[in-house]
Length: 74
Image (cartoon, rainbow, N blue to C red; front, side):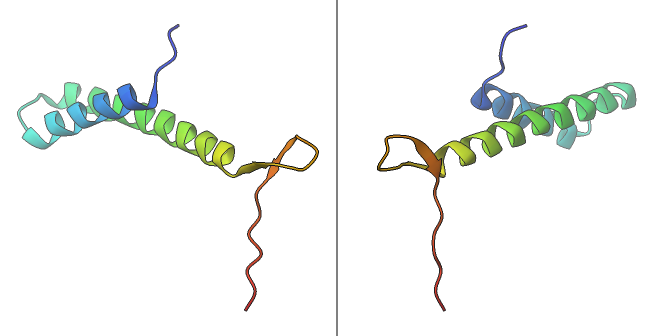
């Protein structure tokens, strides 16, 4: 099975939303599109979460990646 990219999932999600908003599709098809949209949304959320974790890493002095923590002082 081919890996779905964030961009392609988002594009497909936008198409489904337009179809559902049109109100011109039969109920059974609308239910299937809604289910597909929820699956695409899950893919997008997982990819964003992974990207956020990747971005929140910094290269330490030892050359290894570590979590980036901001020290917020009052």
